[in-house]
Amino acid sequence: MLSVIIPAYNEEPVIETAYRTISGILTDACIEHEIIFVDDGSKDKTFETISRLAEICPNLRGVHFSRNFGKEAAISAGLAAAEGDCVVVIDCDLQHPPEKIVEMYRLWEEGYEIVEGVKSSRGEEGKMHGFAARAFYSIISSMVGFDMSNASDFKLLDRKVVDILNSIPERKGFFRAISFWVGYRKTSVEFDVCERTAGESKWSTWGLIKYAASNISAYSAAPMQIVTVLGFVMLFIACVIGVWALVDKLGGRALEGMTTVIFITVFIGSILMISLGIIGYYVARIYEEIKGRPKYIVSATCRSKKKENA
Image (tube, rainbow, N blue to C red; front, top):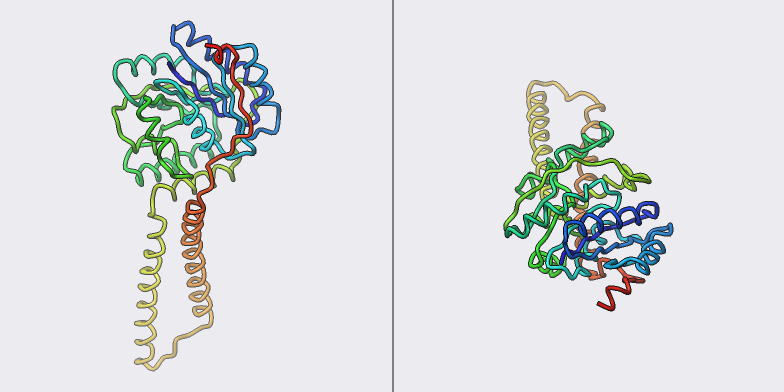
């Protein structure tokens, strides 16, 4: 059986369309399946819509969070709830083409354990957003050691991979990277990003910045090395200024200017504050992990009666 995990946040207008489209494609392909919607604490009637569909549609399950915990938590909850022999994660807005699920499933039948959905185009997006996305994936690719420039959450995982991911205690994971990290036999399927069927993106610019910072810190300590680099930069500048001051002193000239003193003081202060900020961010991440709080809290679930009686 194939489990389809669909994270949803304020996606009331597209829930029914997503279910009927995906279920119809899989039914036509004769693929036994279940569809799991994970409502990430939506403020609209997303979960009410899921519950209503569960009463009249087969093979549908719903998980509702007590509040918004984020997409990564929603994916984790879906993986924990999935009962299938393989699992697909797909966006609720259908920007990931559902027909590609069949192609992924056939590749899984051939023995592949991870089938990556790789973007052949990014669809319609602003120039700044596109530049920021490329910069982020360039940084994260260099840190994790594999190319993630066109990576997405759209992928199929074998049951053994799902079990491994469920066993990882990390609370602030990055699904796109950690599914690369686990290894196993991989292949990929290219797709074009489609237009949203309804609604608008829930990602703000600030939200994307926080998401990027969180994921970079989760997979690399490289930003911590910036502190060391800045320290050597300041040492070099201090040596240059020291030699300059010594030469002027020996030559009978005084080192001029309060401007230089003020500039150096401000520069050093800025470096120290940036360094403390980087260190503080990692300390905060450690603090979040050692508290041991759950990744998410489930406040309600629903399930198709036809599935319960099966």
